[in-house]
Image (cartoon, rainbow, N blue to C red):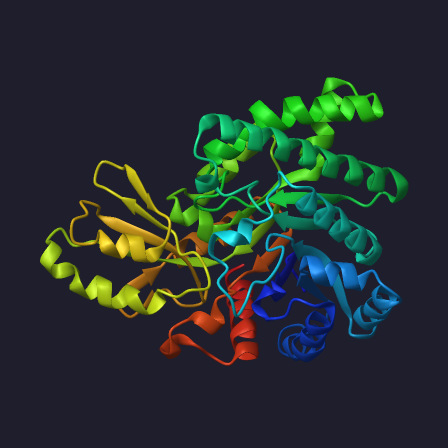
Length: 401
């Protein structure tokens, strides 16, 4: 649905299912219900998640035309995909494997090229399309600097090939499509410094050299092509966890000419750590229900001097709770955006409010996607019926926007 000229939706990675049959069944089950409650009189945009398996099946036989007809009949349209999780995302241990295969692999490249073929066939005229994706790789997989540089080189070349594909699509039919890199804690790109450094040290020089070979571009034409088609996915939860304020991030990106392709609206958990470690028992009790085996719940701890300690998952942080000298924890657990508190714990909802306030004056991106995908692993006392939960989140964003 368009709200104040913004496309607002939720990400369908909330619904378990890896095959196209399962994915389409979920869309047919949930989308009409959500649309009826949230966007009854207007077209509803879908934030589509397709696994590699589902994307292959969608291009077989007449599946794509059947889906396109269903979209038209139900007054729905596509404007954004979640292309970050490649394979299974529910009912199994995902953890760091959400980054696999990473951008060094042909599998990730081929999957993403396929998603853009699907998007180009589905997206309405006059609507930009974006696909969010992994922040290149997972930081802990590449221990040495040499390994990291090799990953950056391979990943950047593959992303330059995405820009090549999207330039050809734009030249053929004027559709503007973009790949939206999604930084997250412990990703190879996890904060604004690393994003800007990657653009300046890798994407622009290496990507421009590749595009100049393909199209005979000048340096400036190649850079403009890369910045048009390779953008940032700003996940509010992720940037909140690394203690970056929205206005600062948006200002720095604008100064570098880096576009934001999509804003994912999501909230993390946070708490202040009492100085007296004997008073921290309640923190352990409060966080323990969020320890689960499906997703990574990275923790970033801040101390009084503003230094950060990163824990790859919540259990490792809890082990250090009583010896930590930190004063605040923020953890990667996507919790419902309409709640500011969870018992004694808080959420980073205030960062979402800041983003929405900022968008009233500065149109950073017109793609807004609520992404609370952890409903089935939330503690029982904050789980709600799924359709009502989706609608409640969308209505909360609409009200604040």
